[in-house]
Amino acid sequence: MMTGQILGGTNPIISLKYQIVIIIAIFVGSVLTVAVSLNLSERFAFDEYDLLRKDVNKRRKI
Image (tube, rainbow, N blue to C red; front, side):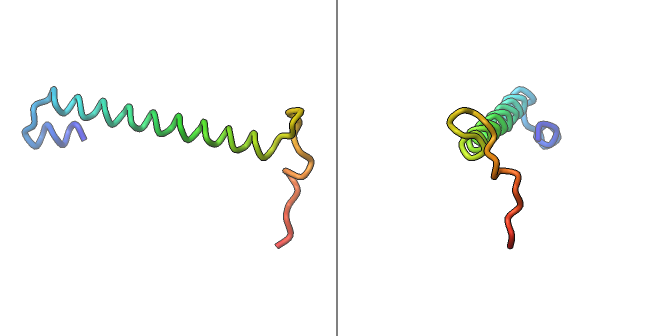
């Protein structure tokens, strides 16, 4: 995006600020995705003693 804005005639400092905002947004989105995935997997795959449930690896018949 930064290269496109510079080629379009925007001030490089402004395009750099936009690029930093986009990089931070991607980082925050990735961190949130990992946190939610870990929370859900811990909730559904482990019991109250933090042991893996026996039925997690079983295949379900369709």
